[in-house]
Length: 556
Image 1 (spheres, rainbow, N blue to C red):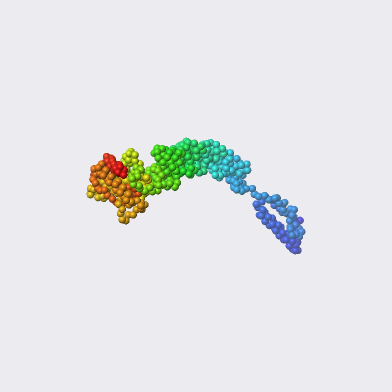
Image 2: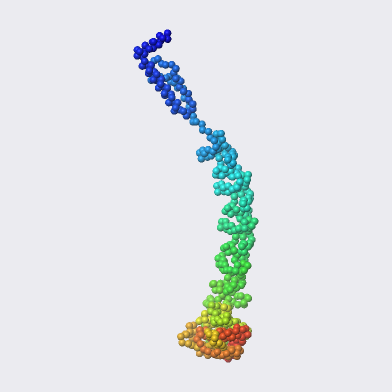
């Protein structure tokens, strides 16, 4: 039977039916190739079922497709992305999470020795304070020490919790943290001041909002009292601010805050100068040099004041200095001594009336101030003339004479016209200028007393006394006064007569009343210098001048 079938197949092939069989095999091969390609392209997808091939060969003419769609491919399942396992730190959408076994951590988690906190969604917290702990920008918790969050400083104890509403001493420095744990800085709290660094100030000046404060060693601020710091006194107000540019009782605090001492200050609120003495209290009803401080400490200016101590009137000009010489005040001329004492109201120029006397003597101590006169053997002429003047004034006043002068102290007064101007504006009867001589050559050993009266000289015209300088009455009276004083001086002192002379000295030329100039000895003669400096010899000189003046008035 088998043999019969084999023979039939061979016969069919021979008869031409072999082409159909070959085409069927080709179609089957193409179907298999297509299935293989589909599997390759879906390798990453969820597993899918493979098509089931036909087990039977087709005996009919093959069609375009040799497989039955319902049998050649199984229904495809929906494809899924392959699952990726997550482990450790993962950065997702600008946030950090930490995974373990593909599960995000929540709550507190210690990673590599540091604590982190993750919220309910697994998001790591950072740059914030959570539950009293500092979480830095990296998310790590500060377990001890300083932490800065959004410009605020915090301090964590060893437990990790921040200090709140409490003091903390760190590296020897005190800090204070508020109820939110924020470190205080640039502020005052509970009587303590905190610097820019947050440190509590101790034994230090601190400036805040343009105002100065001082923290004591304990840290507490000084307030409502005086305190001496670095040898200087300061006053602190009730709010602990340093007082400046203000009065505190009788004391003044300068712009630096330091109490003023031994100095002038100008207070624009009172538009006045004040003088603060040693100890700081302002001067009141007293003289400071040429200035007078009234009640309340105000400096007198452009006004009259009467000083009970000196029993005299003074006029203080706009600068505050007392007036000397002649001054026109409110349209009237007034005469003042060189020490500022008011003499009286006088006409601009009185002139000279022979035989009419007020028994007022004008004394002119030569030189003064920047002009020392002759200087020999450590002796200044200006000092000797002042010594004799003071003795002479005392004697004359004791005899009832009124004494006026060009200077009462070591001040410079111009000798060309100013001394004569002062004298001319008084009602004095006579003018006596006191000097000491010098030859310019100590080896000459010149000695003795000279007395000068006026003699006109060509080339030296009068500047302010053109009428009286060479008036016969003044000339004759000047000569008489010179002779009386000269003879009395020689008699009292036993000094050598060095001459009764005439000259055109400025003080003799410009004075409008009888005037003489005395040269009371040579200070470049060593022996006479020693004699002139002695108190006893000066008393004899004074006695001679006084007797000469008395003789002049008696002679009339």
